[in-house]
Amino acid sequence: MLIRNDTADDWAAIWPFLRVIVAAGETYTLPRAIAEDDARAIWMLEPPSATFVAVDDDGTVLGSAKANPNQLGPGSHIASASFMVDPAHGRRGVGRALGEHVLAWATAQGFRAMQFNAVVETNTHAVALWRSLGFEIIGVLPDGFAHPEHGYVGLNIMHRWL
Amino acid sequence: MLIRNDTADDWAAIWPFLRVIVAAGETYTLPRAIAEDDARAIWMLEPPSATFVAVDDDGTVLGSAKANPNQLGPGSHIASASFMVDPAHGRRGVGRALGEHVLAWATAQGFRAMQFNAVVETNTHAVALWRSLGFEIIGVLPDGFAHPEHGYVGLNIMHRWL
Image (cartoon, rainbow over all chains, first blue to last red; front, side):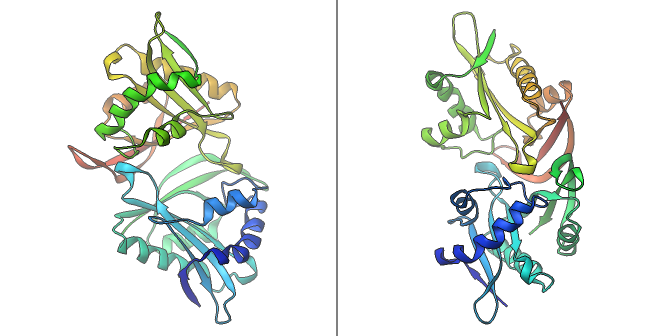
């Protein structure tokens, strides 16, 4: 598995699984029927933000991540990031590899910490992954997420120093 | 004092004090030298968000607030809001009146709670005001804000049920 910065051509490979993940409505605070142009604008970022793809040996895109300043101006020294792994390629460590890559990138860029604003508490796989990479929950927004199966559940705010 | 929804004409009255407040760099996670067009796009919102102004008897704009869904899709039932009071008209209860108005608006719109993502902890006037209106601190982003006088200070994440 290789992780590299994205190119515009990668969108055609990202959109099919991003759309499925967002449509499921279980993990992302994005409109479940998001339009492709809106999704592209949210996901395919320019400096000082960045988008990455994880690809296997034959070039298949397995997952993607984006990283960006979480706030502007006097808050721009804290990074945030988002991750999407193609469900067809789950359980292969793609999310962890993307996470490690993004943490290294944010450190190299001079960010002081990384914050996730909205990790759905029922997304236990993600919560455990981020904990294993050194993140701590610094707050929970109660009932912050309308889950299609579990109803209103909390959104974890997670933080890790860089 | 009257609080009403904004019109496009209000921007000419908002921009002078918004620019001063943002340039001071003590309370907002916005670029201190923000361009007017960027500021207008951030502040003057369309439905389902809203912008309000507080005006006195002669029509002078004393302050402004904006309110919006804090997240999209499955997170869009939680509101957020931002407030700017002209320093020339401070200590007259403008912030409190705007806060009460925004809470009533968000309740009427059907939001379930309001979240502030980034209340600078040294902005003790604001923290006390929001506490007095029923908000609680649900988390603190350590060193989340680069204050021009105090250095890195925390950002309070505040929450209130509606």
